[in-house]
Length: 121
Image (cartoon, rainbow, N blue to C red):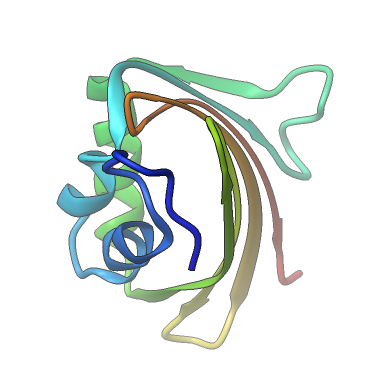
């Protein structure tokens, strides 16, 4: 797995954060001023949901990790100050969600993330 030399961000750290039972590990990868731009069937590319700041990101992640679902990091590529990764999730009832993310990094922390997600119907 790829690692940015001297960086706290690498695929193994991301995997541990995503696949954990709580949001704490994943949240630790975000800078205080991070932004997430979320696109899905309800939030179009022209009008994405933008989540600004670590506190707001914490609220979103706490909500996601409170659900009865499993998270799995499928792939991750880190190149300099950018990374891309694929995540799959499965709810207890079998519903699946796939997401693709492109992130910008600063000092090993995520400062901007564009996430595109697709849900089972």
